Length: 206
Image (cartoon, rainbow, N blue to C red; front, side, top):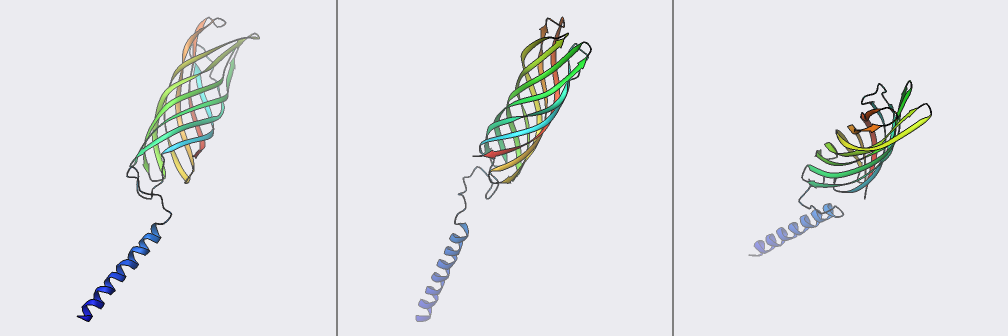
């Protein structure tokens, strides 16, 4: 009988020790919420970042092909369900894209986008597609006279983003942007700007 009692007490003590060790191992880890991979990188939350890239394109009904460096800021919010990530992102860009083809000079001083994003995450690596609204300025200059139009259009693209730390990530993406045509008085034509853009950036998650 005494052997049975001592054996039972030994099993209870062993169980308590194992439970305490498990609690120590999990102490300080975020709770599993059920909508993301256990101990995985979390893409869900708001973020803010900066980017730098290069744009190249062409003007409708004109031989100019404006191109140049692009830089700006982006902000967005992601939701995550398992490995699937969905979000909204907006950005505003300053650009040096321009070209002169006598006697015309066309430039795109700025543009912005508001896009949806959807992707699949392999832990801290996210592959995504994106698309939505684009808007920006197209400026025409000839013989010292300038005319500017702000046009709306659309954009579509894809990219990849890598989590570098719990709050930091880096991305690279390609966008095709179509700023719709409008009638320019000084050119006597309907002009718009279509361009490709490749850019890299960093994001900070809050």
